[in-house]
Structure formats: C-alpha cells, structure tokens
Image 1 (tube, rainbow over the protein chains, first blue to last red):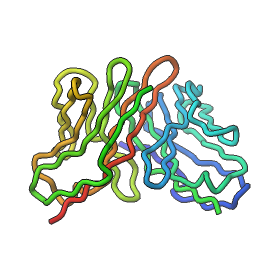
Image 2: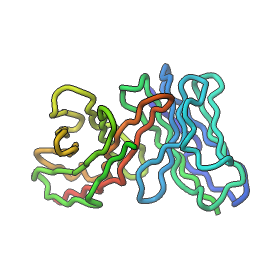
Image 3: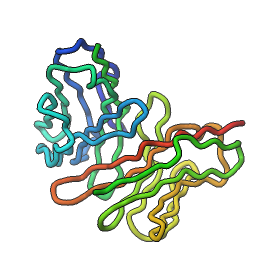
Length: 113
Length: 115
C-alpha cells in the first residue's frame, strides 16, 4: 500500500517568507508526527497529533511554527517569518497506535536563503 | 528524561564480517526501543523494535538486536555484512506517557561496509 508522502520534496525560500509543508499519512493511521532533522543530527520531535488534535506540541521551537490536521488525515506544518536556522529536513511519520512502529515519509528539505 | 546514546559516529566493516552498531539507553519505566536506517535522500526505514519478551529481536534485512537490561544497551547486529548495508543507523527510544508519544533519537552511526 501507499506509504507516507510529503510535499514538496524540496523548498527554497527567502528569509522572512511563510512556508507550508504537507504530509499525507498512511490511510487509517490515527497518530501523526512531525520531526526536524538538521545536518549530521538525529531527527528531533516537533509535534504529535492523535486524530485532529495536537496532543503534544512541546517540540515546536517557537511560535513561528504551527501545525494543523483538521480532518484527522492530512497535516500541514506552517512556518512564519522563516529564518536561516529553520533550514533542515522536515520529516512526517504516522502510526496506527503507540506500540507500533512509526512509518516515515521521505521528508521535505527546506532551505532558507 | 528518556535518552539514547550512540557512541560511534562511524563503523567500518568488511563485507562478510559480522557487524555491531552500539546503542545505550536511559529511561524511566519500561523501555520501548527501535532501530531505523536511513539511506541517502530517503526517509527513515524501520528495522526492528523491542517492546517486551525475548531479549534477541529479529528484524528486516537480516538484522537483529540484543536487549540487555543490566547494561542498558540495545546493540544492532548482523552476522554477515553486505556492501548494501552501508547507511546511517539510528537508535531511538519511544517516550509514551500522559499526552505524549514521540521517538527520541540518537545522533546516528554511519555504517560503511567495504567490499
């Protein structure tokens, strides 16, 4: 079956601009996660959705970052007033339940110039 | 707080030889441990997990991992390495409790298998 998909695969934007990153989870997976991976590092947790609600957003670095999942399926990560330090690969994952593995998408590489 | 450590930035091994990629953990409560592999320009792929039960866990592509509670380790192993195993490997612990459910990753170990 189809895996987790993310669009766009690459995004280049100028400092100060607004960007949206999209994640399509595996059908039927109620849990959805966003992570950020900087060069040479392991992925770092950003936010966890259970259904439509953000159950844990403690990993969002500041209030420029926001994520939604209005119908409990597709999720969008939104970054306002982008900064060069936001440049990273943003990974989305989904899971059918907490004790099962998380399935990751290919990521969106964000470059802020 | 939950955490994992991968003490080796890189592991080099000759094809056909056994390989070990090390991981140690620090958790409160029962550990839920995972290994993922990342190939260039691709997402993370699940290899195996330990939730409970047998200490030796078998996973994808011939990999296995040994859970050792006394040493708080979860090392990844393979009896005979392939050149195609060359990739970046991440150990992770799953932090579940209250409202949270997240993976906490190590810094990764690059495995290089030489022909």
